[in-house]
Length: 467
Length: 150
Image (cartoon, rainbow over all chains, first blue to last red; front, side, top):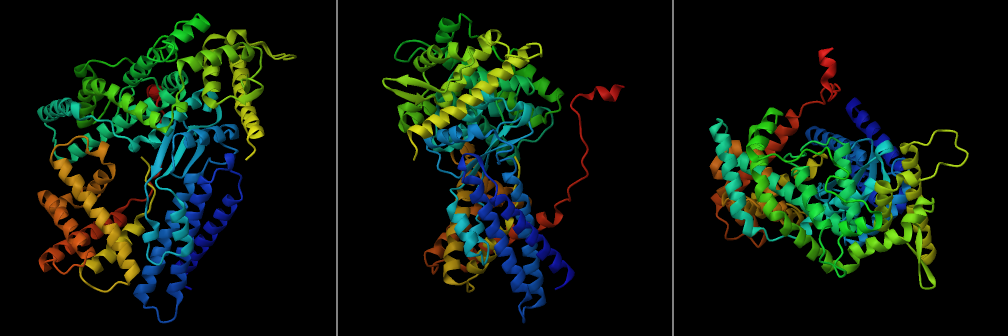
């Protein structure tokens, strides 16, 4: 073996060992997603090893052998980078209690793709979709690679949540938004009535760009498509999260945007935070349910506190008029074309957003009405659990006739947010603690209680349904 | 958006696709796999291209795969083919579909132009891979720039 072949064999051997080590790790919720991903990488490494072996066969032409080694190196490099994808998915990183309830959301939403959850030390919630990279089309792909590829439902989805100090359980309601992204392509709201508005906005952006001496051709039209797609998808995900989790996602998403930057939030990837908050809040005021109550009215009735639009996000910047925002974005170093498009598209999106929410609601109804978190359920959850929670009893279960039923994650998150926003001062100090009782220590206590609620409600569910 | 490397499959697909379009021998199961994937790639890219040229601004939203596949060709071949790219994609989509269905009716020059298009994409991918910069030395930029005034 020549030196470069030895180096390749050494790298492949180490990668195989790394995959074996990771396969032995416990992934919370008995999550199969990371294992399927690791199988794919192992298959890729098998194929790389096959290439290396083929290069050694007697009679292999030198050019062919060089190509095989080079492609084995490429596969090794791909495998090495793809291994980073499972980082943070083990139970040392992500709170193990939350994974099983997240998986239940996945099932309820009918998400069939291979998915897993992980935490990273970043102020970011994110769903990444890895499109099918067709590893099965690699020449002479081994059976292990073909099997692993076929065992995955593409695209692979990875949900990232912030880890460590920013891994705040109430904020994990934002995961519902990320799962909304997982189903965003399953339904297409009819936006044709707004095509004219979009065209007007794009033409206005084009005029701005051209009058500033810029170019607006196919590359810029591709960018336009990407911005529209991203913004529509953000609103779709917000809508799904709202219907699934109710006020908790409004508090969590806006609270998270406040904690992690509180700017305008507008970019090619996201519409303005102020707009997203506006539509979420509008839905909280909706009284079209059976009882005629809205989330806002229930909150007021049960807590005597007004639920206002900026309750968790007073410092999010209000959206400016088009011209002012365009100038602000340019002054903030945004590219001319992006600034023009972002500023001009906003009015069109204010018009089309309700259509996206309606389509999301219809899509969820097709999956089953049990998915909706309603104002009536909100009232019941608050009545059942709020006072108990303030007495340090976590919302684990409730009585229904002669049975005890486990609380679901949406209920726990919503009661948690009501306590967090209106009752923190009611939380007693820990017995025997010599530390002064601070707001932070009370919130930590609430956080622990909610984590315990998620964990023990899972235990209750397993007890009731051991299969 | 992060990019995970995975271009070897595309490279092998295009190499084998080139062989098939030129009429050279490829073993039957592989030929079927390659043609199935090529038909998908080119017909999607062609659909994305046509929708974009019709100024339909919801193409990416409603037809994400078609849009992404067009962008793959546009990104790598716009410089070489310019305004002709749309027509070449349309022709290639028809040629590959015809080959999949038997291929007797495919004109030789259309086959050649399709092979040229595949070859151009392969070359562009190889060039991109060869020119990929090494990971640069990184420095940490702190958002709070107060230190610059100290």
